[in-house]
Length: 385
Image 1: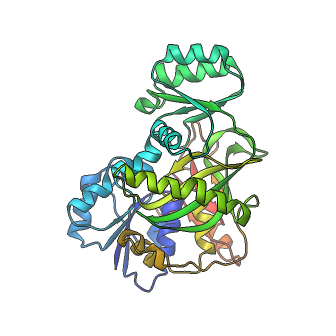
Image 2 (image 1 turned 60 degrees about the vertical axis):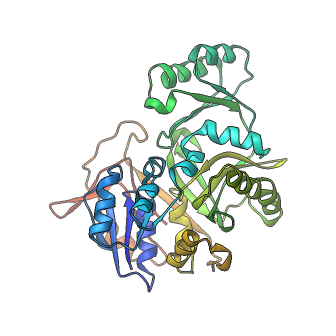
């Protein structure tokens, strides 16, 4: 099979790396890819945002399966475009991807389905949001409605922080239209956990648990970033929690989506807060997590490719996954200054020695080769598992 992986991050390198191991895999393309994906496949100079060009490439090269990594092309409807050309793509349709693309859509859906989540208020007007903060009990969580590269969630400890955050999101448009509307919700107390599930519309297959660390600095300090590390399995997840997770969250969600005419096919992962009262949903994501994927896939003994195919074909209930019972830990190496301003073009060395270590896998993210030398080309540069 010819496979196209869309994206350029560590998640996409991990997906390409795992798919390359399949006996069914003949050729791997990555668009646009990075220096790591170039070593296991062929990079294609098409950005993930150029949906029409990606469709043309898949048609011209007779790609059998396209796997979409990032959230933006899913939210823009890339799977719908591929389906219109009778091309197979793994990921949810535009309507299904709203569960991640709009925090407000997800919150209203959870309210309607009585899925346990934080109490929240929704605002389309900054003046109303500011008035709400005058009487709010702090701390609160302020979320941009749309996609913001994992940086659109701010925990405001006081009124001053809340006011400045609301102004930046809604008036200054720090995140563009993504911050035109916002959600202000209570802070849930507990520990976070990521649960990934392959969903074929009606049925789902849970992957192993994982836990990521979003803060930029050691000791859980600094601003939220795209994700600075992860480990699997999560140390706060157990079988006792799985029953309420399935009965109170996953099953009602899929039934509710189907009633609304939405058949979700792809990877769904709810970000959870494990509270004293059980799992509570922080957010829904409609693609593989980054960096959770870099911790999960090295533990997966099963072939990933047939699992993705079964998800598309509505047959995930016929599948099972075999796992390595050892834990995996992923640490992200980032450019100085990330998630703020950072310099690119720094030389990277030592990867050859690291690659020789037993049970160590290095996934590239913001990397490129210039005149034969490996250079940094992004905020998150490498993930070492």
